[in-house]
Length: 471
Picture 1 (cartoon, helix red, strand yellow):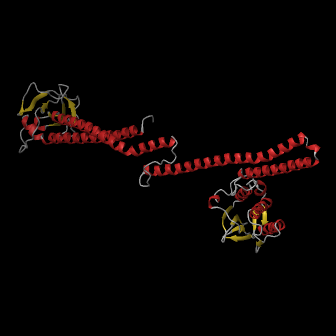
Picture 2 (picture 1 turned 45 degrees about the horizontal axis):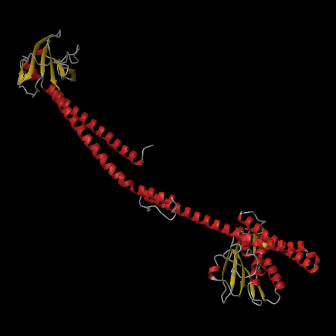
Picture 3 (picture 1 turned 120 degrees about the horizontal axis):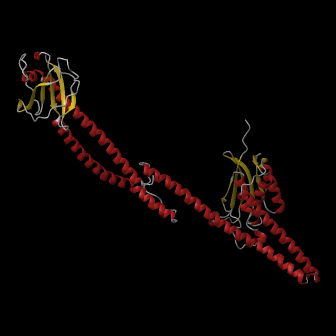
């Protein structure tokens, strides 16, 4: 497993080719050997009468001449096994004292049988030549029997030539296969090398880079699609993390700035008291009042930040069945008490029951109504609505004031964001109201959005899931 993929593929291909060649060569060799030996066996069986006649037996009919190879030996043996006559094929049968003869086994398998059968292989007297031989009893010689042995020199020579040819061809095929397989593997692995190069670039920090090929037509292409999908998710996660870190830094900076203002006021009025404001009752009362007001303001700011933090952490809310119609009615009554000269319209034709935290949802609607009252002219009408749309509950607060800039819509729910930076903190607040609205609505599984009111102004819409009806 320490080898490269290219090395493992090359070894696998060459191994398969070698195994295939070995099997094919062995099958060819054995098939040819069986064929050649079978042909020699047929010669042994066909030359019975010719051999017997050559050794001196009277002919029993027309002799069918057989082309025995040079070196074929015919022996006439006495019943005790001694050799009575020998004939060796040269140019036709003749005697040859120097001829190689077969080493006969002690017990001949066909002794006593009048027809040759079951040829077998024996070693020659030179211990190099092999003979294919058979034996049979010959009644024409009065109890003697004949041994006929055909040398396998031609068969062995043919098989050696075949073996040499198979070896050379196999080496050439293996070498050619190795070269061709290496070329094909290099071409096939080229997309993986490109992917590796792209991965190095991505690892260096370029998360916008994508790997190629990315197509469903091939295995590597499908891998590219999967990697690109994963890279898109990673890039989105990094972008989200970066945006989250930027929001956190901005939140910390804004929170520090907002807390510094009341702390600075408290410190200043404390210095006033220490320097002798007690000698002036008016200055003393002013200092104590302002210290108390700034402390309350700072406590409210800290409470709001803690609420946003808890909701962002997924802290559970006190969920129970509540009627948004009742909450909207109370919010309209509160708004009329705060702004008696303003037209506050309520459109809540019927009960709308959801599962939620009553206190937090009242805070949501209260913040939206207060936002409309503070950021619109004194006599601008405000409309509060409660209805259901496509299986969800919808709360809406509509004003007909100056509205919002398009560039502010994406950041309107960020902590400490003010659409009008010049607005004083006393009248405009710290910029946490809409952030609390967004956090509370999200914790309830809903969503809040703002859009332009027809004719001018801003419309805030809150969508919340309804309580499922009991069957």
